[in-house]
Amino acid sequence: MDDFNLLRQYVEHGSADAFGELVRRHIGLVYSAALRQMRDPHDAQDVTQGVFIALARDAHKLRRQQLLAGWLVTATRYLALNARKSASRRRDHERRAAELANTMTNENDSPPWERVAPELDEAMARLKPRARDAVLLRYFQGKSVRETAEALGISEDAAKRRLSRALEQLRGMFRRRGISVSLVALATLLTTHSVHAAPPALVAATTAASMKFATITTLQKGTATLMSLLKTKAAAGLLALTVTGTTGVVVHRALARAAVAPAASNAPVLRADASPKAPQASGDTSKAAAWRKRFDEVYKLDEGQDLKRVPPPFIPERTAYFNAIDASGFMMDPAADGMTVFVMEGDTPEFNSWARGAPTVSSVLGSLAGIPSYKLELALKDGLRPLPGDWVLRKDLQEDKKIEALGKIIRDELKWKVHFEKRSAEHEVIIVTGGFVAPKDNPEHMVDIFIDEKPNRGAAGGGLDGFLRALGELCNTETIDEAAAPPGNGVFWRTHTGSNLSREKADKMLANVTAQTGLQFKRARRVTSHWVAVQE
Image 1 (cartoon, rainbow, N blue to C red):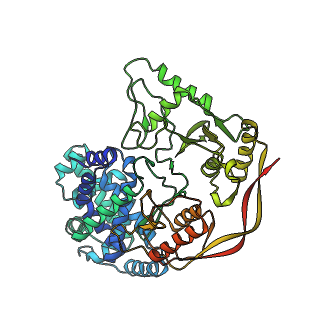
Image 2: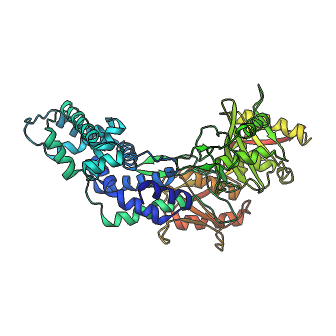
Image 3: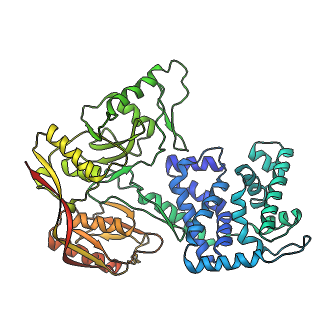
């Protein structure tokens, strides 16, 4: 298979074999680029793994006409740039760059690769995509001119001209950095030095890390379908996840942010570039346009409206919308009990998140307003009041505005006379100190959150803040982070217990976390702010 078909196998079927083949094909290219920029084999391996983790996350966004090698070297450059932000490495890099800029060589001399390598990737990034793709195919991947032309869909003469112009542009960039090199010498350097074999163990480790990243976002069957990627950070070439906690698994928008195109009579498919497009209709498309128009009429916000609930029964056009953005049903199950949130993108409502479970006042406050259970003072019976339906909110609406609008809806539609006030008072909290160390007694290095047994309710991943928030949700007590954040990979964990634990069970659970990670937990009293439900 070519690269794109392998990507499709991975995106549509989660094929580890297909992704592993992509890693094997391109890891030498990525590792070599990372090594040129990082100048340290260990750092280069970190960046390499980060690039393929990013590919595992974003594979659905790549288009057929996009050269995978070009995407990979671009991702490598950005991750390496982020990884070099530490002061010592930056000073060392600037020193080397200054030395190179002040050194001139004879026009006919071939400059040593050690002087060209640190500047190569930045120069490649300055080429236009078509020129960069030609250079990558011909000199980095060792293809002939004919093979390069076929891959680019142009004639051999056109490929030769494109390669010649690209080399001349690279040569000019090197000259401005004080490095003179002939076109022949430059072509020779690229051919002989641009790609080196990656360490054998790195192939297996990178494939495993990338697939683990993808797998960790999928909870056990029957629990949820896909975790949200709320935030990604590139640090030392690795990506950290942030999740929303454990009381409800939320699928946030992992699809394109573009508006959904009107669907034709046959079901639309989610392409590998994740753009929900309607298939070509063979006949009248008036029905296709009608469903989107009707959906917008029901779900859009009125002038001056910040938030609204769309109660069941739902209109048929809602199903057409979900088919358009998630034809496979992998991301969500709209027929099941759950809560869907839409955000106004301009004048149209677009999908933002979906949470499994029958919506209640507590789950709506958590998913819609982002208020964790330990920040909400609400009687259990009131928190369990059913509040079914979809929700539409104004983009970037502030927390207090969400609560104000939600309180009005609860009063008007549930006929429950209550409003919510934010109050500061002294509360019991859990102070977290120490430095996180990933467990080494299991191959996934995952933290098991348990009391006595491990029934394995589901897996999750995130930064240390997401992990501590999850613990706080289970204990129904706010966690105050005074711990040292883990380097690189972030935190991955499995939850084996329910929420609202008694103090005794919560302390036992936290002791088990301490034994695995080195984090220390201590209860204390602090002044913090909570939202309080006030009966009117």
